[in-house]
Image 1: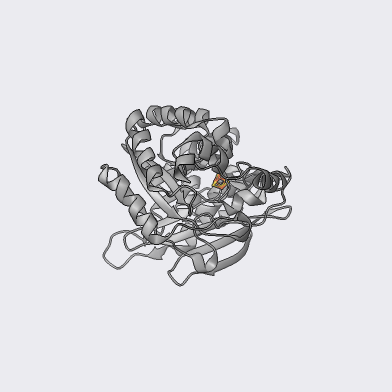
Image 2: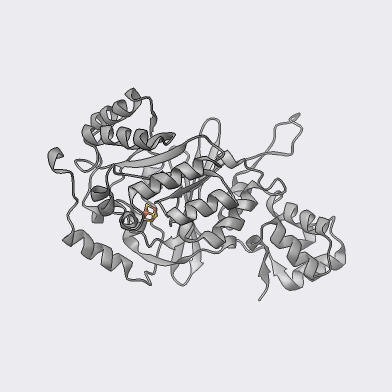
Length: 379
Ligand code: SF4
């Protein structure tokens, strides 16, 4: 079987090339051809010696993910569905804005965390994606969308993707060994050259791996919070039973010491009558103040899907909730829903997952037996 070169960060590629008797600068050239120019045919790589190109063709490949579908939303959002084999498919979403383009990347086929409001979580879990499968999403999107630069700009192209958010299908920190080289390739100046502030890992709160990420590759961190107390969060984000809010806040504080931004983004999915009471907004203020966590809140209108049994908070309630946080001096944004006409909005990514863990069955059972707990005084 030939080696997929998308699996390597630069150091990995250097080591692989050295085993072939090639020098480091050859690996750098190869890495640039693949990621900066989007080349997959070794014959195109004109500054590599013919003998090396022949060696590469025999031993290696640059293997993209087979594309199953592409949908373009009225607002310009693009959703791709990629085949990752054995009946599994993952989704990647490109969100264009006036001044930047953001790519939302998947890290797993399915997800084992099973958050109650998340379409991916309801499908269960099949497997981790490899580094190549994570990087291939960016490789494909960047080179499909990249435009030639206007005359006189002095660069051959304008970059399509300025931000990557690991917020697609899966919990990235439960696939850490594949994630790390993928992040390094996103940041590498010989590849995509994104700044650490513009690559965001979003986690439901895998505390030990937040610490590892801080040591190995501190990029921007988003934490899916969704509740101000353990009773409710246990129910919405089951991982909270393992890593409760107190531990999570401590991990956020440790991360802030090395983070490229001076705040953590807390994601908060607005669920009607569940986590959108104004007392809960006040409880969030107290929570982050008590711990001294420098943060920003991103309120996400819930995108309903049939199996969830949940509905989105009313718009005035979202505004009032945001106002409580803002009045406390916390930067708060309400996420604009993008691509919902093509099911590409946040929490709607579903792909196709052959659930190997029977997680979806367990989650469905849990939903029947465990009602959502809201603090008594709020009911
Ligand atoms: S929100 Fe994230 S961690 Fe939770 S189930 Fe969905 S993909 Fe998994």
